[in-house]
Length: 98
Image (cartoon, rainbow, N blue to C red; front, side, top):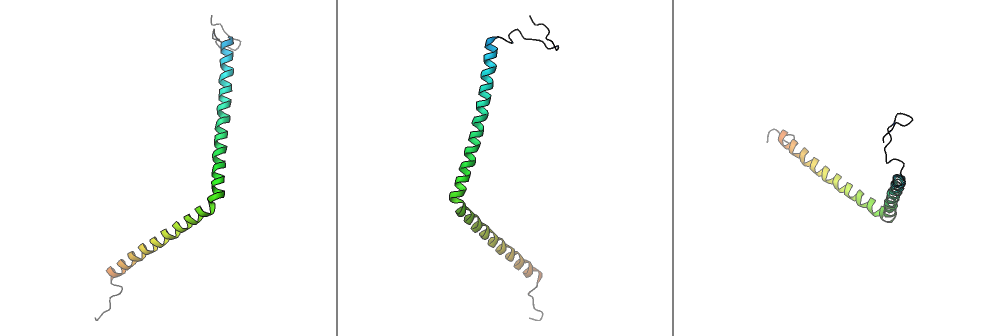
């Protein structure tokens, strides 16, 4: 039955059976294989990103820069429209006596 172990731990009846030992060995092997598989996938993804950056890096950077310049120009146009509206409402261009 379930007797006391040396350190006060209760032993299971099935602990230490050949099938239990084989299960532990198989579970450990699967865990190691899963870890290795995950690392290989991560390395492959990094390698793919590296190859893509090497092949298309310049084109991607140019596209980002062009998009950035376009956004800045749109922002400037929007800001100038806001300033024109503010000046018109405040009467900055109003000439007294006309």
